[in-house]
Image (cartoon, rainbow, N blue to C red; front, side, top):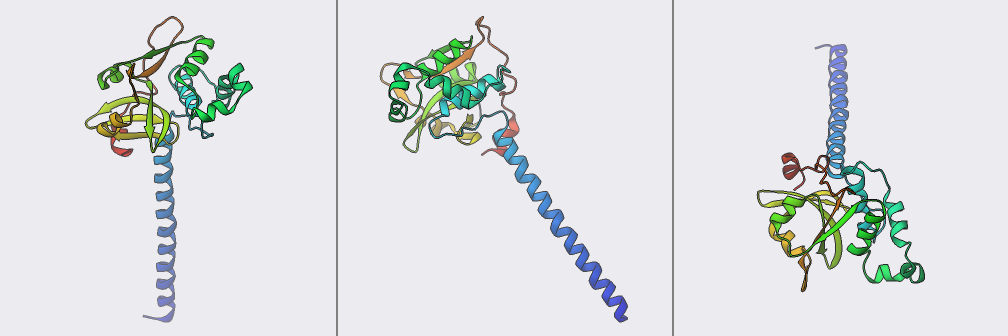
Length: 211
C-alpha cells in the first residue's frame, strides 16, 4: 500500500467517524426532544411554585375546551379576591389555591365547575379528565387524571408534564378528607354537556413511554 493510499484510507476513516459522531448525536437529540415533547404535550407546565391550580385549569381550558388562556391570566384572576388582595400570604399558607377558587374562576368564565366527593378510581375513569388533589413529597398538589391502563394511571401533572404512576401509589397520594372522602373536580360546558375527551384522551404508548 502506497503512502498516498494510506493517507486516503486514513482520511476516509476519519470522515466516516466524523459523520457517524454527528449523526448519532443528532439522533439522540431528536429522541430526547421527542420524549420531552411527549411529556409536555397538551399540558400547561406551571411556571410558579404555587400555581398548580392555575396550570391545571389552563390545561383543561386550552386542550379540553379549545379555549386559549394562560396560566398567568388565570393566576391573576384567582388572586383577584378581596381576601387575597388584603393578605396575599394566605395563598402560600394554604400551599396554593383551593378547589373552590378553581370553581369560582371556571363559573365566572362561563363553565360549570363541579366538585365530587367519595370518589373511586372507577369514577375517575368515567369522568376523566378530572382534577384531583394529591399529596406528594409532603406537598399538596393538583393534577389531572387522564386515564388508567394495567397497573398504572396517566396524569397531566403541571409540575412535570404527562406522567404515569402506579395505581397503589396514586391512591395513597390522593388526598382523602374525613367528610367528603376522595374528591375530584370537572369543568363542563355552560350547558352542562360533557365535551368529548379528545386532546387529553390517553394513548397506550404514553403508558409505556412515560413510565
